[in-house]
Image (cartoon, rainbow, N blue to C red; front, top):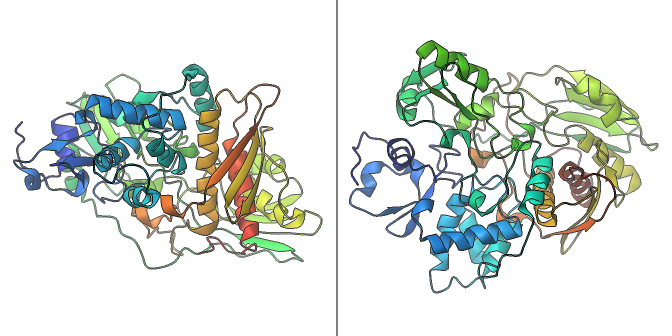
Length: 497
């Protein structure tokens, strides 16, 4: 197969010239998320930072080129363990782990080796544990499951339509940018509020003058001052990036409707308020051609919604004051998410914030209240689901009750993923944002997402419940964040690196 060398990357040639959309673009061209991993002469390579000319005359294997029997085993195993939710990161993971499994030492006995391999990847959904479990159970017979019920649970937890099935782990969940017509124009931000439109991603980014992302040496700092008061405990949080792997993307034909950006996953609420769909429709009508509208990883960090930073204190009676960066919808929800707390909204220069993100604000209230109760109690979400969590030398234990479980594999996977995110909120996650509101951490590795090797084992107990199924991952997130914060001595500023 011959592809002209225009000075671009292997990923561009695969996705946009050859139409091979198994490798995903999660950070291009940062080379940090692993979603575009392919094999070059049998060895894993990150395609987005591999110049096309470097693979001339060599054999390139994508997820779709792996032996079908092998990829099917991995897909079944990841589906069986809940090791794939949205399915954006797993094609690259399968490529790397399948190559590793072929080596003489790839018998699954050395989890440290698996963790070292996974260090080249990011997975925001699953919390890693279920991915490692898929490695352990690769040759097991997949259990009989009601995948319709599993899909219903996944859709409930993600807040948008989400499929469950082996094909999802292979990256075939129907992501918007994967389904765009090959002859579509490409639009990327021009840096001044408009769009640059060109025939390809590389041409558009070149014309827009895209600048490679960077990671600052400055630490993440909470932007709000604490309110004065006789507090038993205080808490301040920094700017936090949702860090979903699939960057915002859509496409639209003239006179049509834009492709849904949350085609197989809710991005933890991060894509609910985006305006890319309306931009795609306007550009398609203006150019008389289908237009793909894409955000780069840097665009997501600069313009995508963040968890609202808070600064608050709690009194011995469980009441308190919580200062929150002004956020749309906060005032309307304050009474329900923070009863007994006075909410003070503060204007602060910085990226946009959203109440749609996982357990925004009420999880921080739960954390403050845990300092009064001493932890171990139930944390009840606004929807009625509840969870409790504890931290010990052996790991994190979580109990959830969310009505009809529907499918315990999916529910467990979402709870472990929420625990991973909560652990990171307390221990490592944060963005450096200066007083002018400019974000300086623009690489995906600078968000502080916890690596596979750094997350303690998570044990999940699902209690049966009466009534309709309820989303449980937000309650699990709040419960685990509270338990980890308590176990670390209630540090006043997060992250508590």
